[in-house]
Length: 288
Image (tube, rainbow, N blue to C red; front, side, top):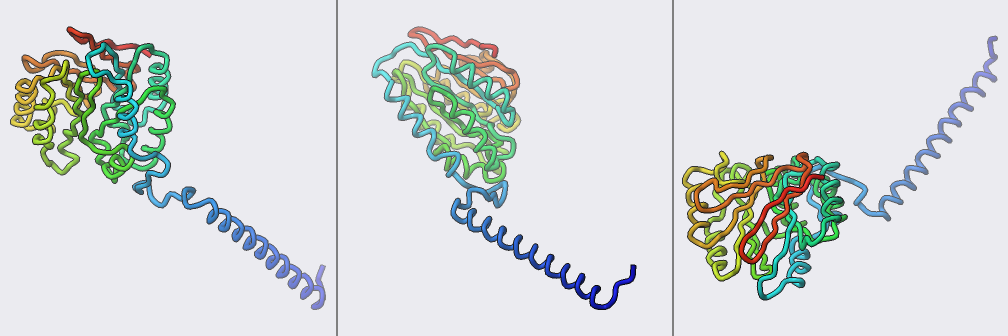
């Protein structure tokens, strides 16, 4: 049916009015959305996967955990147990099961994660990891691994967990946590001076344990650094060297004189428990 000029102009003007009305409605709703976001804050907006933000994941978590641990510590030796996990990366289902299993174990005093709790050191991985470990009923100390050096992971780690090298005294035992990553630090040697200064102070304790993400016979270590690490431990009264990184379990005197313990990754679906008694310590793997 052919419309006369008046009818055509009426329909055209009506369509223009409808489009204009729809545009005004969308513009109005968009303005409300922007206003809501401005009130809620910028936490809804992730500008980059490599952003650095500790407002969600928390701050100085290791420092807070240490305060909880030392409040229960004795000035003299008392037997105790710790649970150790490592290399959870983004295996979140396995990590959740590890957390649930640890919560059911009896007589565990605290937990240690040996590092590599991310794949790429990105902000969201810190958030997801901390959300899971917050379900633990015990304090947890988290080390830096080589994967946390990717992206802005090193900066995120220091904001969320604190210093990369630190010590803890518990029940007359000295725990030395040492960052030994090399390749992801542009080939820079670990801080052996810090390690030596701190393990020299440990000979008067009942036990001294060193925790470092990477075992010294890994390719990241030069032969000289591996020899020097083992030499420092043997000459300064270290009783056990604990590591992650390799995604296997190992407990033996790799170099004669000092036992080495490597904690397997989360997909192995086990918890390693270190039981420390007056005259000896024992290692046990508990299946999930």
